[in-house]
Length: 98
Image (cartoon, rainbow, N blue to C red; front, side, top):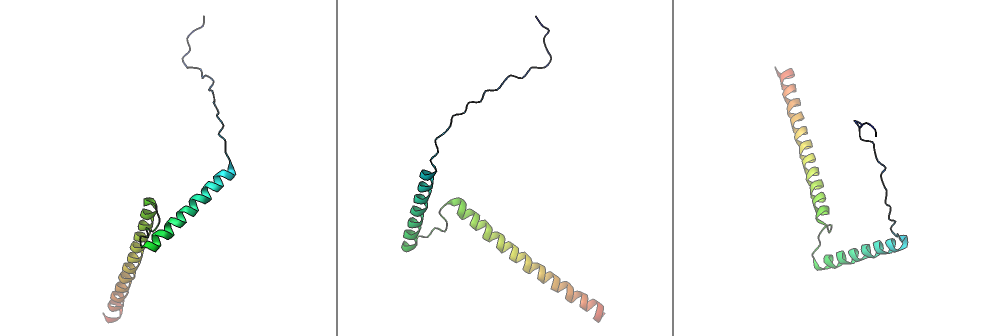
């Protein structure tokens, strides 16, 4: 009989690996079929005037956010140019007219 230890000794961990069957050709075929079906559906919507711009809500949202970021960046650049022009005109008036 031994003395009780202060630290718990680690036990061996078991690893249970269950391999999955992966067929690369089947996956490629499935992805190609899915892509073609999406293209056909998009063409049908375009012909009917129901174009949805991307398909998924996530895609639509990222597109909206990107466009809004571009607008904000453009607006901030225009605002910066206007402020710089105003400061240059004010500086010119103070140094050469005063």
